[in-house]
Length: 131
Image (cartoon, rainbow, N blue to C red; front, side, top):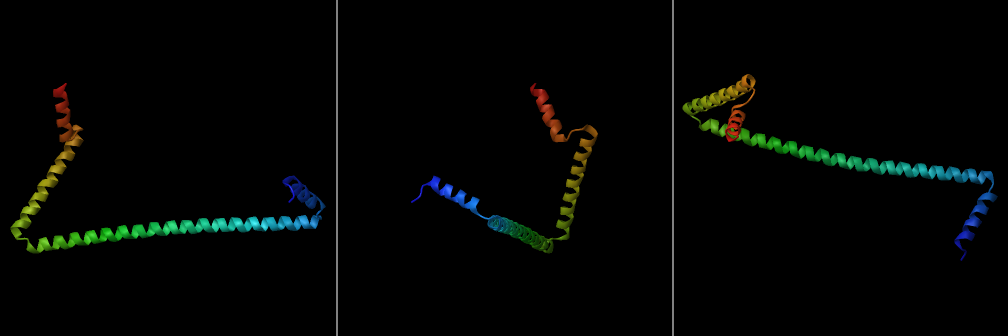
């Protein structure tokens, strides 16, 4: 079995003894092979990216289907409540909604006029008292 040095020497001698046509054909072969390898690497990267995107797409579809089912359930529940609701209950619910909205509007106006919401003002007063 030849040693590494002798194998290297014989290979380098072979390369030197090659004709320029042989060298050229070997270079062409090496180039083609590297091009094929890079194409296969690109192809595998693209396939991985396609798989990743398809997973994301299925996840997104599942999320949207889930939210649609949730909306549908809420709609059904609301329709059931609406069907059993008397006009008095309906008026009471609307009044509660109006009161809530007016409170929200007042909080917003307080923030605009005074620069603080009621909760922040109370916290500030509490902190001042502690100091």
